[in-house]
Length: 221
Image 1 (cartoon, rainbow, N blue to C red):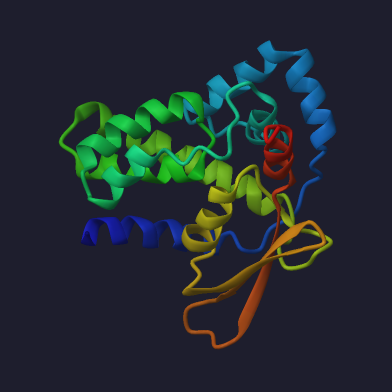
Image 2: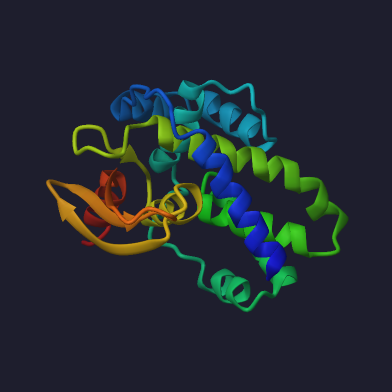
C-alpha cells in the first residue's frame, strides 16, 4: 500500500509541475473526419503512442486520444468491473493481466493506465517491469494533452475528455484534489468542486465530456 501511495503521489507531483501551460485548439470534427476517412494513419499514430513514443506532437496526441472516441472500440460506459475488483483487493497479478488485456482495446484510458502501472510496479513479472517506463510515458502524454485542451477553470475553456473515468483521474491523480465537494452539469459542462492540499479555498474545474454523452444518447435506443 505504501508503494501504491508513493506512485500516485509522484504522478500528482509531476502534474502540478506542469500546471502552467498553454492551451491548444481541439477540433473534434476535424479529428473525426481524419479518423474515419484515413483509419490507417490514425492507427499508425496509436501504434507510436502504445510504444510510449514521446516525439508525438500535441496535435498528434489529440488525434490519438480524441480519435479513440470515433473508433469502433469506444465505449465510455465500460468500467471493467472484474479489473476494478482485483485492483481494489490489491490483487496485482490479476490486475496486471486484466489491465493489459483492457489496454489492447482502450490504450488511451487514464484509469486503465494507472491501474496497469501500479500493478506492474507490484508484481514479480519481467514483462510488467519492462512496461513501467512505457506506461509512465503514456500516462504523461494523455494527462498532458487533457491539461492542454483547456484552462479548466472557466466555462469558456474546459478540459476536454472522452469519458467520466478520465475526469475522476484528472481530479484525483493529476490535479491532486484533497476532497471532492460536489459535481453538477452546467450548460452542458461537468463542473467539479474540489479543495486542494494546504488550501482552504474551494475550486471549480470544468470538463467537456460531450463525446460520452453523445455516445450514451446514440446507444440508448
